[in-house]
Length: 55
View 1 (cartoon, one colour):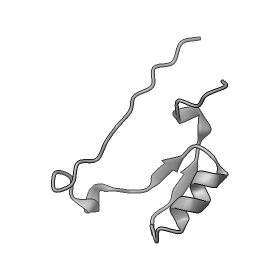
View 2: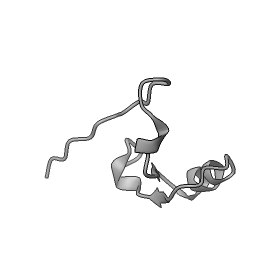
View 3: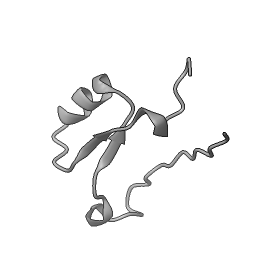
View 4: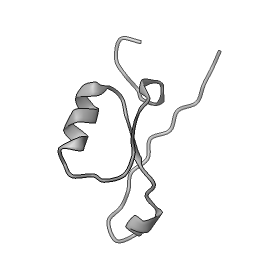
């Protein structure tokens, strides 16, 4: 089964933060690191969204 994946980048001063509803991360290490930044929106663990080596 083929699934397409896309990479996205947020560009400062081009997207208002009010449009950000949360974040997706690839693993628990990333989730913990991201949580420490003070990000107050939902953080969703979803490794299937990312280009991970070894899969």
